[in-house]
Length: 231
Image 1 (spheres, rainbow, N blue to C red):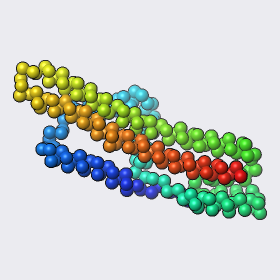
Image 2: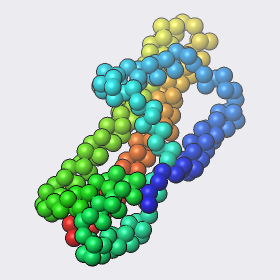
Image 3: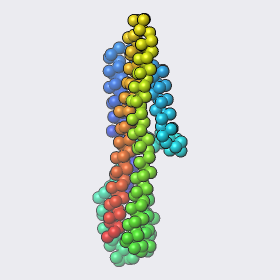
Image 4: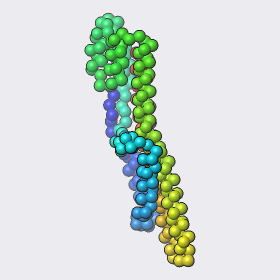
């Protein structure tokens, strides 16, 4: 009733974004003008360093695995869940908790299987609700960590881009006696801001948003199961 399917919209959005920006760069002149190793080091290195300072290494380490989930979307068949709830209610009235326990083993959805086992154990409604609500809360908090890492990187990347720009401007001011170097150095200074804004608005923040959307979908499904188990 639930599966993770590859989200072509996400992949298409990334390709479209980089494609249009790359096309604009190509039309503006040369790709070489948009490459600066020092700027890349400042933005990537600074963002990575700030992330390691702010979050424990155990959280940062799997960040790329977490980010890869943005390429998938949850396909939750809510109508099928509703149909099953009606069927399970009938089963428990006719055959009792033992049959519900057997049915719980048929579900790949861990939350659904856990809820049915609690029902089969004839747990009191108040305690059942407390356990399932705690499961939902733990899920939200666990997923929130990856989202927060991505949002933080989206915040720091432009900041380090500005730092790189300031460094470039300082270098430019130091060579004001050489007018021929002012234009190229100004371009290099602005590149770091470009790198920071590009990473933030096309990678980090969209990934954080997609992860939050996936979590919201799962929480909605779990809350629907919770409400059904209460009855």
